[in-house]
Image (tube, rainbow, N blue to C red):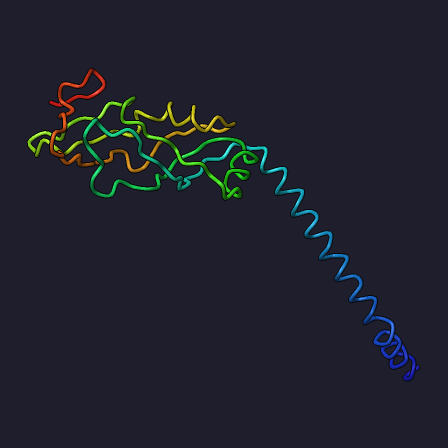
Length: 169
């Protein structure tokens, strides 16, 4: 019997290599398939995610322009199903959120120059949710407050007396 184990090992090496490779390939295929099903199943749950989103500022006060560098992107804390957030995260074409100065409340910074103002962005969350029209909701916005300057141009009207939308304390 001393020759029989040697023959068995030779036969295993000859036939076993291809069988072993085939088994490994099948195992890896089903491992990836099970991972895919697990991932799709996990996307049904609700998730919270911070996502950078572009923003555009329009309609500064009459006769003034926005000076300085307000953030061009805001960090939105989103909550929604994994499918909707995954779809938003992979889609590269995000239209910017619009901050319309004619429709928001901006306030003058106390004890400062009359050209310095701020906007509390968390007050605009419902407006942002309306703009996005999606299956997820915005929980919060970072930064919470945006500071800006409206330098006075010659022959311009200051925003102090221009309506109830602006608070110029």
